[in-house]
Figure 1 (cartoon, helix red, strand yellow):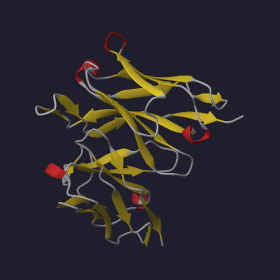
Figure 2: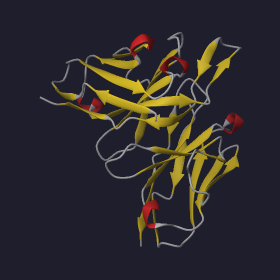
Figure 3: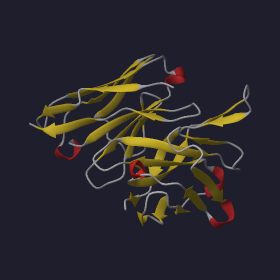
Figure 4: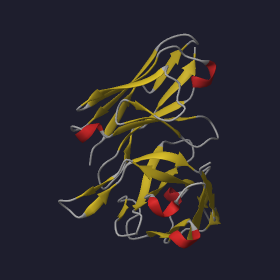
Length: 108
Length: 129
């Protein structure tokens, strides 16, 4: 089973800043089966990115995903107030789904 | 509009049972694999179980294998999770989630799960005496 490690655990930035969140896999992720979700307090997660770099429907283009193999990243080019939330990466395409432990993006 | 509405959560004693339901609408339910994902209070996401469109392929996380049973009724557009022998560590919000991007593995004859493009709002299960 692939283990996903997200870093940092907490990221403190200001609106307008650029955010880069990391997700490292314990072994190579085949076919870039890697997704990213955003979760705000009291809400269900929302799909942002799938296939490592494809944006989901209605996701603003300030969100982008990159990476391959074992190293992946979610970049938010210019933080808006509504972007402060917890972000999870997710490995799929196997018999078990695996999530990273999450990165909390907080206002500095 | 895709809608997933979970129900059936509540307070149950350790060792007890509970059956969760997820009512789907706004899409052709029988054409999508489905999942259950849970989140313990203040913790991260944990995938629980997967079921393919015709129920031919089912997977469970090791933490629930042998205690939980996933099922679906395509005629009723509903997904279920039967939870037996509940433990305190099963306390969590349980989400149903629609599966996208999965595929049929020719080598094994099984489906492989995809990412989760739509989620319900969740139902809280509390296991406590």
